[in-house]
Image 1 (cartoon, rainbow, N blue to C red):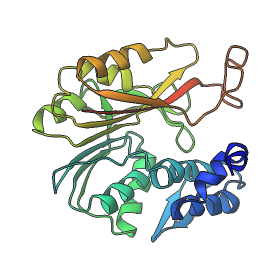
Image 2: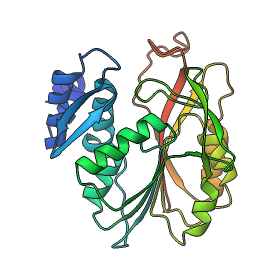
Image 3: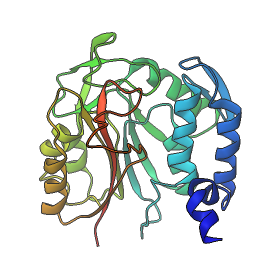
Image 4: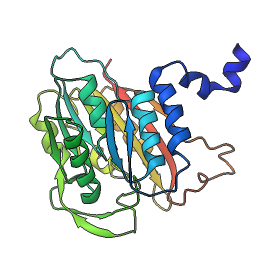
Length: 268
């Protein structure tokens, strides 16, 4: 049995849970579709409009199969700030897992934001405050490159345009307690966390998707320092394996980023 687990670890883990088995079905059904083609994918009791099938399958893995955003709270009505809500997969998870939560969701890309709102409406995922603006260090707007699927970022040179922004620090200071702060903002995370480093006192759980873009400094040390000085314990993981990293300096097929990490932090 141990040999089977070693050789087929991901498959073995997947078949242990219902959502893991659903993930395998989604991979077989949708992962081979042409990239960046819009369509509708049914999953669980939802039907979502998606701009790219493979990106959605990876979202399902992280959110529903791995439950990377699950947290504990002693509040019956936890407060969740979702920075980078994309098409709404995380919001579906948060709403079904924490039905009485107060949720504020931010999405920078206007086109993705339109899909997000439609998915919430058509699936009756209700009582979520949607802010279709970029999370940033001020409210003066920011130059933002829209990409296909989930590749939009500050560093994208495709379809660059000025989008409205909000200062996350202002939202944090207004909340006496934030049970979960999710930050998946494609390269803006270090600047935003630096701006919020003295406003994280009331945050109890934090998920950060860290990105390092080729040609730009790596700032993981800054992020970790902010977590440590605010008393968080943290766990760092990566869903993107890169064998022989001292030779393979880039992920296969990725000419934009050379590092992507998931950082989960909590107060002990």
